[in-house]
Image (cartoon, rainbow, N blue to C red):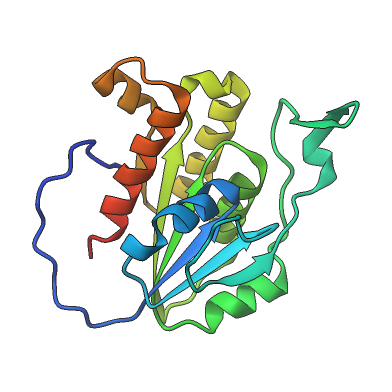
Length: 203
């Protein structure tokens, strides 16, 4: 696994030879596109999520995805992620077909730890392969304050990727607080988003 440096140095970009497609997995990754889409350099963007986030102004394709209810428990009207291992996901044919329709480089982006992003990230690593494409996996690892079960889910997803002999560019968000101090939650996530966006644009 490749852990991205927190402070990115200037990188000389190679000439663009292939199309690049961003595939976001789950709500955390979709929110990055809705906030920073104008700064991203991709030929297409696909959101695999339950909806397009409010305020999104980017041109995107949406593949609706809803995680299994077995991943959650309810307290009244509120839904919480269950502790323990997330359910295994059989990657839908609609997603496989959409991915196969793209040529060039596919960049998969997920915020690991919660349900949708983690389950999709894990399923694609295990069940999707195309020798005519270049596959790149990019993921954030959760802050410690998000909970030990969320951190465990993220670590298990990374292990699944390693089991498939695949590598990912990982962004451990907890390092932001270690570098910048005890930021507020909103500021900490904003720093994380900016860190990821800068790295995504590097060819």
